[in-house]
Length: 276
Length: 307
Image (cartoon, rainbow over all chains, first blue to last red):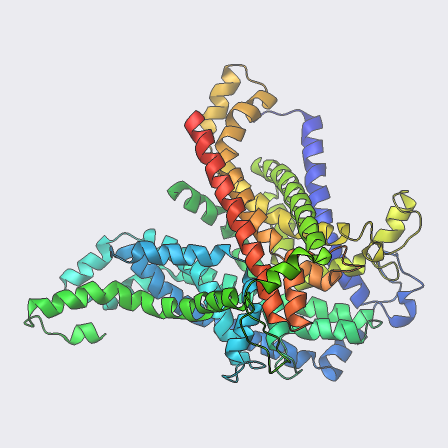
């Protein structure tokens, strides 16, 4: 496409502005996390401290409860991601490959769960889980997060299954395999990218969840990262360096996942949009 | 796997039953979980709205009819939260959409390093919401954040104070965080829709002498319109329920100036442990959201019928 040099420059500058705005808050997090305490106030608005240090990181890792929070969050987010992906693969396969009477109702039910405010469920879920001993427990959180994430993940997996031709399992079934064997041995391996995307989405969602974790978890032992960080913030609100070091640590898993999937984001959505 | 055990010679009826039940077997685990953890609590929550449920009061639990709703009718904090919700949702969605659309249009042009630029501008989307909230709360903090000083230097603020503790301005804090965090979502969705527009259309229009503005208005916008409509509808509902940033940044304060309905429900349940009243507010919110969605659907139908 021909374009005028003035427009090209304006275009690049606009992109640059977006990049700066997107990255600046994260950069500031990093900057404060490596600023030594004695320079924090004297060099408040400087772009980079005259002396950088990792002392906040070593403190957070060695002398605080953050490793426990990190471990709890990994357990919760990891288990949720695996559980959701298994359930959503099965349900997504049913929606993609079978015509059955209740299909319409199942889809409707899953859509409804996406529309109503989850904050409505905070009180009833607490009341339900408490007699079962599932408040203040990681298992309780995994169960709740799994249920919350299954509907969206089911639709996601369904769209991946829809992209795989039916002939493949039909051929296998003619050779005598049952549909479940065909699903497990032929279709699932082909949807590995879809499975990876689902795992990643659910992991990030469970890693970030705040309100239900605040409500259901009260002690430090079962606190996830968001709960731990907020408690830390309200208790030690002067240790900015340590808080931001902890914040940077919380960012790592989410960013790793994002870098893995970001190139497929627009592509995947385009494919979905074309299909309708 | 149990199905594999049936030999081919079994009675066809059994086979038929097995075949008919197969999709249900696949979807049962997900369905059971959704019903147990989402549908049952939803129904319970609706019943709580008509009961006196306070966690720390063992004598509570009785049905009290519409008492909660009467109390709600006189609850100034609730009406303030309702107005704040409109303000919070409207401003957030509008700004996210405008900046997201501009970003999508910018990224739709091929240029060297587009992949990298795209990865960087979409990064906020991956930041956990609680961290986005804390991050912006710190940026607005004059002790360690630069924003108050910059806004003071630009003449926007009289003094480098924290806008989060200023009742007049506090709502802009969570809105700024929300816009920063939500632009990528709009941009990703709109960019996907942009890339699905056939390129020949633009070439044909250029040959016919259409300028860039005309091409945008008569090709791009009509093609994007359905995506824009559905994204805005979904995001409006989602953002009006999105309490994380507010709970993290201001906790509804100062003086309830940033309390939205969703964070008010959470405060009632989490701090006051008044589950009955929290459920009553939640029920009102649900009805309002349903009404909004129905209104949009009806509006769309009438517009489609006209066109």
